[in-house]
Amino acid sequence: MSFTNFLLILSVFISFQGSSQNTVIGTFPGIANQNIKLVGFKGFQTYAIDSVQANEKGSFLLSYSDKDYGMGYLTTHDNKSFFIVLSGETIKLKGESFALAESIVTIEGYENKIFGQYATEHPRREQALSAWGYLEKIYAKDSIFVVQTVPKQAIEKEKQRIKTEDSLFLTSLPKKSLVSYYLPLRKLVSSVSTIAQYRTEDIPATIAAFRKIDYTDLRLQKSGLLTDVIESHFWLIENSGRSLDSVYIEMNKSIDILLANLILDEQKLNEITEYLFKFLEKRSLFNASEYLAIKLLNEKSCTINIDFAAQLESYRTMKKGNIAPDFDFEKNIIAPDYDASKQPKKLSDLKSKYTVVVFGASWCPQCPQELSKISGLYKKWKEHSVEVVFVSLDEDEKIFKSFVSVFPFISICDYQKWENPVVKNYHVFATPTIYLLGNEREILLRPNSVSQLDSWVDWYLVQGNK
Image (cartoon, rainbow, N blue to C red; front, side, top):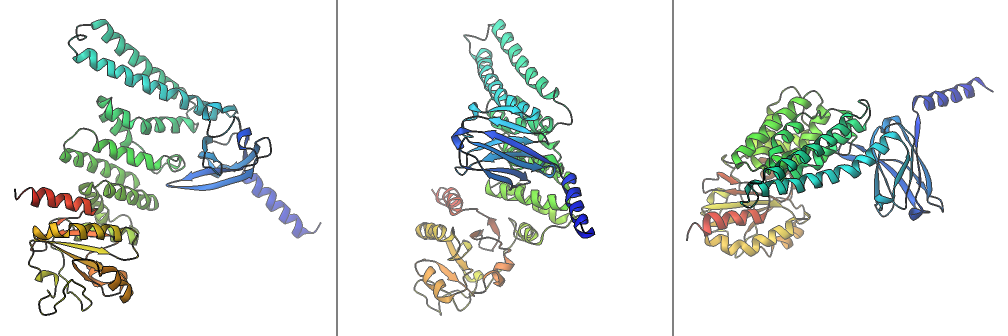
């Protein structure tokens, strides 16, 4: 054997030794001859770990390495999935199919057995707690039952027993096991809707638990729960029964804690805050998204991704109460019954009390539908002194003119797409983007849909004039 070949074999051997392989073995007759994939989690994303075709008996063997440490799931072509713990142990499973979770038995794999046991028992405990909580309220408020002290004491005792049993199960898990981290986190996330509806007394403690989460922990990134943790945290604050002002105070407090936790990890800071920003925007929690944007832009000890920073900058420059930039109506203006001698030359020439500025394009998936809604509402809006100006990001003159020919409002386009100076001055980073301006171009509202804008018109203008 040559020395070169010897070195090659040695390097392969060392590489194999440095990254141990673990196996997932299963037998599921219901998925015989189907392709089976093992998928892992990385932050907000998933990735394929291994795949294989099951034999005629539904048996298969998949491999995963130490770098896949975390949660994962098995899936077939019909997207039926079964979650497993990739903790470095050999996992042996049997059942009918992934769709029939009750048929699946974990033959080998300590952490997976624990995971399966808790996944079965915890929901039943939660159901029982909710039922006892419902009865407790009846015995506390209904005049027929309020005098019955023995049942009330029994209910409280049983609730406490169930909670203690659940807590003891979790605290008894080996401290270094993955399930000792994952199961309490999953319990926290899964309990949010029940707590908001039935166990409101637990809301403060649950919010406090969310605030203690370390977002830099690799186990969280590999848990598949990152999205749920963020959304559940802020959804619970939103639905905690507080006044809206109080909701924003609590959200801002959570944002401060989150940023303090992430400040030394720029990659995670950008990924997580961008996701949170979009979530708050989607739920129209604009005060909180504005607070997050300003905090990030003012943070000097980290670097924000350029595209994300551009989104955030729109909140500093184009926030409610600021004056929107004026802009000229270019020669490519399209308006019904166009008369150059009578048409306004720029935005500030409009005589309406309110102006809606809409940014969009023919190629934008949502724009045609939203602009059609505006067209249908335009007559009503016009009666209440609301004008509309559409700024198109189209690049082709024929396409632009064809697209806007049916609109009853002013449309303009300079065919520079994102390089349009108006688009840049208004810090537009997505289409459609809508601004509602007052008669002095003061920014009154940044609606996330035409429906929200129309609700504003109905509430402040239509109803206000009656």
